[in-house]
Amino acid sequence: MDSLWAIVPLFFATAFIYSMAGFGGGSTYLALLVLFSLPHIMIPKVALLCNLVVVTGGSYFFIKEGHFSFKKTVPFIVASIPAAYWGGTVLVQKEMFQLLLGFSLLAAALRMFLSESAFTIRSNVSWKSSWLIGLPLGFLLGGLAGLVGIGGGIFLSPILYFLGWTNAKQTAASSSVFILVNSVSGLIGQFAKEATVPPLELLLPLALAVLVGGAIGSRLGSQRLPKLILQRVTSALIFWVSLRLLHQGFLLMT
Image (cartoon, rainbow, N blue to C red):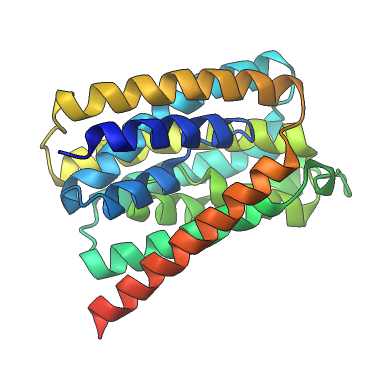
């Protein structure tokens, strides 16, 4: 890919910004790869592999700092794993892929716009409520994540916000672990659908960029609050890209 060295710093910046909030950046990796015209069938695999590089470290840092809530997260994870695998095996047409990605980026823009102070624990949750709500929603989010080729934390985070179950750090920890397991499951589904491995000359520079960016961002995010101005500038950029992808997707369908 001729534009590889133009996309590497963008992957670094994406990993750095997203990892501060517990995300892998998969939705934006996908958008960048689409905009740089990578072959359609290869895009989800590259994004999921980069996701894994980022959230493995992110999950470690957030769990180490004591922010992960087992009760509030595991029901979502249990149902999402098989759904993410199934979603990864489904062949999605290019126009539908761009529409799903556009809507995923809208969710990402919404989350990045919210301040950390917006995430407060407003209600207690029992184990029964956690499973009753978490299982169906986890299945839905996992399936959607698998179809698009992301980890799905960008969908889980707004739901936890509206439920009022977690504060900012707990939400980030839950999202990070959710992305980790679903990236693995979705990636297995992607290889079951089409076994081609992305070329190492593409993967290695991108993986190194997100490894460094994600390590820095995760460490900062687990210990101190991300900068709101940076988040909102990023939100505006993601919103613009999402509108562009949605426009392209609708044009392809008409």
